[in-house]
Image (cartoon, rainbow over all chains, first blue to last red; front, side, top):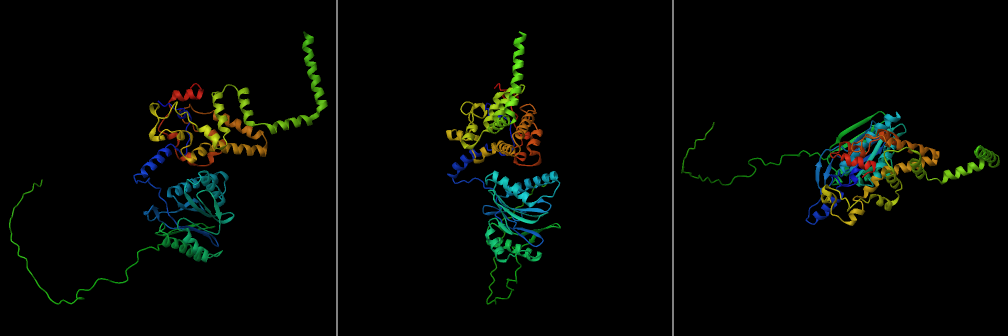
Length: 278
Length: 210
């Protein structure tokens, strides 16, 4: 028999905060014994994007970490939102994944409703409104880039809901390493190959200089004509081949003396056991 | 008798004619403008509902609850709304505090929300509605939000029985929720909840008999 009045009210969907008190009590009492609550898996990422002559190039590394352990060596951090809008996600892996999926659904519904292809500003606005509503508890920082009727645009959105519109952006734990490469070599209206090389170098800087990023470089080139998703564009951390043989040839060390001592062994006991093999 | 009856008719006609001649349309217009500006349309709606509508299935108890929700502003008033009926009917089976779910009983536990987002999430839809209505009122005038709120109330009455989950299609369309996907559609879908409410209790609660 349910006695409380609350259960008679109609239920609504969405987040349920029933267990948050219990979790807080458990965490505080368990930490006295040295146990820790399980942490959410973060991506510990380097993601970057630039605007070049014909469009936008997004780049990301492919490592997902679970505190100090690599949870996924080759995860995909560049997510689809619309035919010509893609989004890189950093921060908590699940949050970034679910946020981009919700965004993709909303953009599709909006496109069906209005009958027009989506604008990158629309995606950014919906993202920042949703992230602000949850006051940063959804820990995902995103780089949204794409081409629409007004041109090529690149936005970065932070977990609390602020955003920046810039010609080049980096996010994640390796952002400092990547942005240093951009600050040095970025020029507006670069050519495609140079731009791809620049993004690859920025992500590689994050891979080598940041512990949370690693494995391969993924690129996504978005232009008016279409999208080119280059998965594993570069593998800077591939194990190299050894230059030479390091084994010594037999006969490298000269033999000076040789003594042979045979060990005599006598048969002490001999018994035969028959096994039942049926 | 006949004379007594005709007197008021003649007098009122005379008054109307005098009123039209004397005041003209400006004063009346001024009075109406003043009324429109000073009105609190939520209260006006409540009055109108009680006075002019036929008996709805939800008596005044429900409308009072709505009134409290609509006037939430600031944490204190939100807290007032969120104080549960603790002590008298604690949650959980057999009327005992559910320690596993809600933790130990304490005054702080009962007064404060368990998560910083709990209050803002619970009040999100009403706050959005309030904001939209007040913007609409400023742009289009008083009639627009009043008409919309009438439609909301009509749509809210088309439901299944209380313990069954209704799809709320009309309400969703009015709010514009049919064109977007959010966490309330993905997580904790009430249509798929494992517990069903007690039918008798829920109907009694809805009728205000509880």
